[in-house]
Each structure stands twice: as C-alpha cells, then as structure tokens.
Length: 245
Image (tube, rainbow, N blue to C red):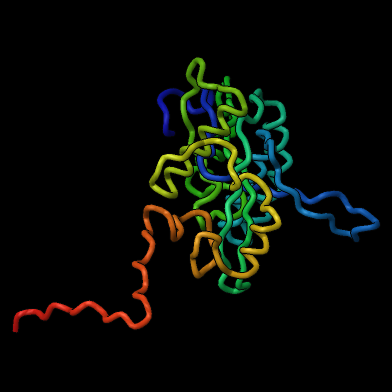
C-alpha cells in the first residue's frame, strides 16, 4: 500500500494525473440501431472506477478463472455503492495522436482529476492497488488511466476549475518538459474550421511537414529554430572550409 496506515480505513484519494478514458454505451435507440454510441464519462464515480478496475484485472486472467471473476462484478458494484466517496474533482484533457495505419490524427478524449475516500477504500483496496499497476480505461498502452493513491490531507480538495488547471499544468509539463499555462487552450476545445482544414491537408500551420500531434514542440517554436534563408538567385554560395588532412 503506497501510504501509511491500514489500507482499508486510512483516508486517501484516487488521483489520475494522466487522462482517464472510460467510455459508456448509450441505451439502444430504434433510430440508431441496437447498439448506442460510446460517450466519455466526464465525472466518473467510485462505482465506475471499481467496475473498470474489475474489468481490467479480469483481462489478465485465464479463461477458467475469468468466468468466476466475472461473476463477482455485482458484488463489487454493491460494495462501491455503499461506500462513502466524494464527487469527481477535475476537468477535461483531450489529446491527439497520429495513426500511421489510418494516415490521420485521432482525438483521444479524457479527464484528469481525483476522487476522495474520507473513510478509506474499504474492501476495495486490493482492487484499487492492482489498478495502480494496470491502469484503467482505454489507451493504457500509451500510459493513460494511471492511478495514484495519495493521502487525503486537510484542504487538499480544491474547486473543480482549480483542480482541472493544476492537472493540465502537471500533465503538460510531464509530456513536453515545459511548464504549461494551465488555462483552457485550444487543446481542450474542438478544432476550428481552419484547424480542421490544416490538419486534413497534413501540414501544421507553423510550417511542420507533418500533421501536428500537439504533444511535441512543432517547428517554428524555440525547440525547432527556423531554417537559414536561401541565397538570392545568382549569388555564389559561401566557400566551405576544408579540414586538415
């Protein structure tokens, strides 16, 4: 257990520094067919996190043990519903990645934040401890859905906007190595028409020959200085210095 004290009764919080992508399918709609669309859970509860952890652990079990593990899901839901937990505190953080197979950018919607457990995780602590190693949701192979169990100190909970800003700053610094502004930027909003046309053409607006992934510094920034100017037509190129033989 990462913090001191009894794992079941020590107050703690579940912190998600990387974007968490939990998707839920809508109920069947006659107009949309038997299967509804998948939507991102923007305010996941302890029940959603416990079910996701239960599903994640089951993905690593062999078939004989998987069926017995799957039958325990109603019990996990009942324990999570009856256990006291705070609301989700955080905000959206969307990323994009370039798909070589599809030859286009793919938007990865997610949320960053935390859930407070003032009375500890109770009987769910072994499941949550496994989630710290396995991560939750989609995109775990990219490092998304990371869970950190931290002590719940007085005054550690902040407002939703403040927590979202701090999460964006910390994740932006972890990805780019530079401190982020933490304000709501174009990364958290839908792309405009010019941005969509620019990305569809496969060129970045700052001069990059490839589509901008928005997780790395692009050309035109301080990390990539502009190339030297081309010589004028008819001008002789500068003589190269020959090395010593």
